[in-house]
View (cartoon, rainbow, N blue to C red):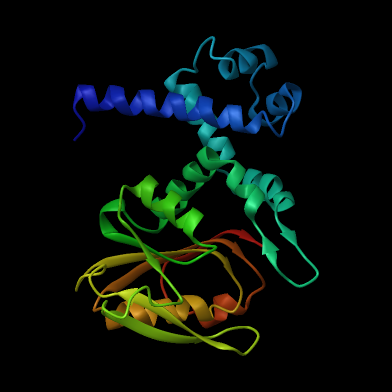
Length: 241
């Protein structure tokens, strides 16, 4: 149960998060457009983003509720994703909005499970690191990075092979001292297509005698990944393309 001091700190964090999110959104919207989205007067939005005042707790929560809605996420973020001719999914512009992403991450994770159900966040190098770090920071949990090479021959690793989309086989390496028996793992990656990478990470965690309690990805492309992870619980994509 929160004490009076804890409640005040939580209220202040909520109000500050709302202001920081508005500042991010102002890079993409005019005050008039933001006013239409949030149903807040333009003059008041200007005062919030300029630091003249901050919203009340009630209004801050309403702002955060609207920007984490599925409708807003789809409309705002989908246009930030670029699929190139070689099928590379470029999500780099989404990372321009860390506060908004943090709100969305916490909302999705808390719908899947409690923060206390996660001991560590695991992400593959390289593209998943930004989202993985953001998720680990939001949940206040350690981040473990799985790599495709051994950093030293003097370190013990768990290993798991994965067949890539181009049919080449690569290997994931996890330092044995980074994950302990019984750890509850949240896997995070930027893009999921076939689900093969996530399946390999799940097998890797099983070798470490840990349990995968959820999977979070920034973008889910197509439906193949849903079929391949049909029997895995708590699998969510922030965006679906």
